[in-house]
Length: 345
Image (cartoon, rainbow, N blue to C red; front, side, top):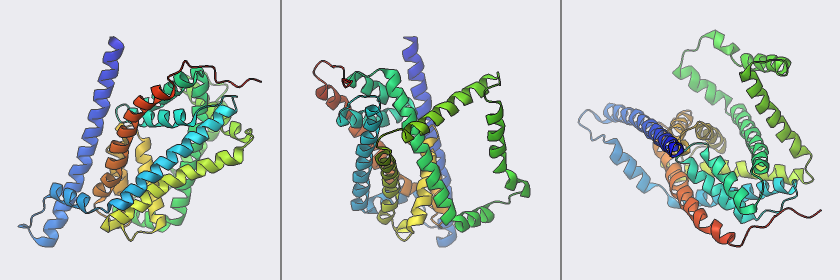
C-alpha cells in the first residue's frame, strides 16, 4: 500500500508541476500579448488572450496537423522495427506489433510520470514476448544512445546553419559578460578529467557517471557489431527526420509560421525536442516554453499557440488514444500462453 501511495504522490507532484509550468508559460505569453495589443490598438482595445488562443486554434489548417499525426505514427512503426533489430542480435524474434503498442503504452504513461513510460514499455514487451527484463532493458540503452546521437547531430546542423539568427537573438535580448564565452570549454575539460579518474576514483557520483558512460559506450559499439548496422542507422535517421517533419509541416497550419524556412523548422524542432527531454508530464510547459523561445528567433511572438497545435493532437489525444488501445490490443495479440521466443540455435 505504501508503494501505491508513493507512486500516487509522485503522479500528483509531476502532473501539478506540468500544470503550473504550463500556466506560467501561458501567463507570460498573455502578458506579452496584452502589452503588444495595447501598444498597437490603445488601452480600450479588446485584448483577451484566451479568446485569441481559441480563435487561432480554430483557424489552424487541420490538413497539416493530420499529416503531422500520420508522420508521427510512421516514426513509431520505424522505431518498433529498429527496436526489433536489437532483439535479433540477442536471437529473439519479436512481433513488431508488440513492440509498436509497447512504445505507445510508454508514451501514455509518460504523460503522468516522466520516464516511467520507459519502465512500462520494457515491462510490457518483456511480459508479452517472454524475454528476460534485463535483456529488454539492455536494448533500451542502445535505443536511447542512438536517439541522443541523432538529437546532438540535429542540434549541430541547426546551430551551424542558423548561427547568425541565434547569435543575433542573444545579442538583442541579453548582455552577456565576455567570460561566458569560455563556458563551452568547461564541459570539455571536465570530460577529459573524468576520463582520467573514472576507474580509480572512489566517489559514488563518479562511479555512477562511469556506469552510465560504460553503458553508453557499449551501446555505441553494439551498433557497429550488428550485421545490418546500415539499416539500423537508416532507421535512426528516418525516425528523427520524421520528428523534424512533424514540426515543420505544422508551420503551414498557422499563419505567423507559414513563411518560415525549413532550417528555421529544424531550429524550432530542436528547441522543442529539448523541452521534451526535460522531465515534465509529456513535456507540458517545458515544450511550450522552448518552442516559444525558438520561434522568437524568427520574430514569432506567440509560440504558445503553435506549441498547442502540435501538443494537443499528438501528446494528448494521439498518445492517450493509442496508449489505451495498447491496453486492449496487447492482451488480444498475446492471448495464447506465451512461449519462449528465443530462436533455436
